[in-house]
Length: 599
Ligand code: ADP
Image (tube, rainbow, N blue to C red; front, side):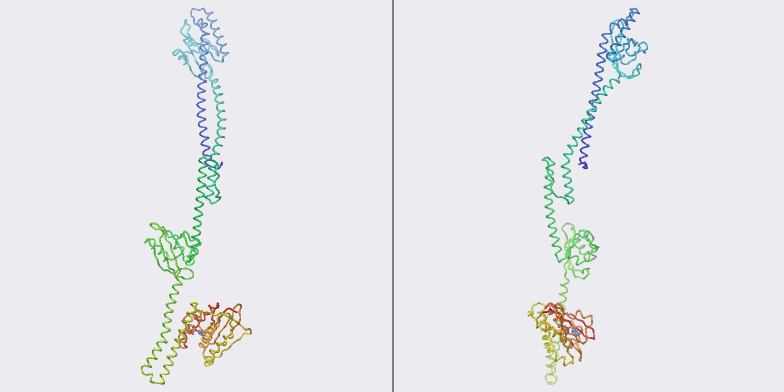
């Protein structure tokens, strides 16, 4: 509580007000008390003076009577002096009798004969003028501050003399001081009580407010969210109640917003499209995970950094600029700067507001789309090209026959054989294309069974025996000791080996050697076809499995290749859950290894 500034403010203001009021009140009371004491003292002096006047009138008349003898005047004076002394002794005041000329006739405190003339004393002047004179002044006789009161006294024998009664101011001031001290003491006690009471009241008023403040600070700081206790039904209680309602409402809104944000974050994170939002100054407000795959963001926290500085892509920056300038969506394509180059389609849309508060960029990866488009274009070009060559040959031979060669039995049979050859090539090409299309599309129905590799090898060797014999190529079959079984489609495996063995014989010069070997390796079966043929340069290794790709175009065409064999092998292997790889050195020979699941 003591640490609350409001508490101290209120407490000090209240105490200050109390003190000001108390001091003001005290000042008024003390002043009125002083006036009252002065009045009472004056009253007393006057009463005494009046009383003295009536008592001293007789002896005074005798003293002032010029006709009286000296001894009677002497006695009268003595009588007056003794009366004055007696009375002064009883009432504790200074009493003086002064004649009309200012001559002191008797005095209770001093020897009257030694006293100066009093004609100029203000109280006596006032008394002669107004019948009563009061003065507060130092006494030249007693050397002390006195309050004097003088009244005239008529004796009928002489001009009026004066009775003067005086009291030492110190006496009055002592009385006033006593009263003031009591009042101050009382005031001090009351001030202490009032301060204690103020402390308690202010503390009581402030406590719920302080609690409210603490709770508000805790809530603002994200700490304890429990409601404020309501201790009263007054305004502070109502405020606490309103605060609790407001806090509950805010908490609900906050939860709602957080849920929405989480949903939004999940949606954004799971999107394949990259999303980047920037403000009107092109500073990044948001970037989802996909956008970080497309672009390498500089630094760890991209939010709040300029787009160009963070993404370093001028085209993206320009797209945002255009969008902000035109105030409408802009669409374009760009190359991403991430590790792998990607073609991205970018759509920039303005955020609401005039001018727009920012731009949302939606990035779509169209690399695969473009690749497929290119593949399709290449495929169409390749197919047309592959078909054109044999068709042109057929057309040329047929034309030659029509123009007369048909009557030349020697040449005509050669030309017809060529036409047959080209037609067979076309036929093979179409068969290969159909097969590859079926395998690629997944239309081919495979009968996956336990296949003995040896049987497949025997069939393959048998199929190519004549060609090998013709080229005097030695086909070596390195049979493993253990019987080896693959889990695959037998026809498919036959096609794989047919292609690989066919190629090996095709690309191996006469007198060469082709070796077939197979073995179990973990969960797989490996089948290798190695030749001592022309080999393949390393630059072509990764591409020989593509459709229509030929490492040595002239040789392949001459030998009747379609450029589809290895592509069929690759797709079949993949369809069986296996793979195919190549080791080869130009001029030294090639070795293709097929790996399929083991039965
Ligand atoms: P092709 O019908 O032209 O033989 P493939 O798809 O079977 O088509 O082979 C692709 C290319 O790989 C061939 O054109 C050839 O240049 C090369 N090739 C395939 N097998 C061998 C091999 N055993 N030795 C050398 N080159 C080969």
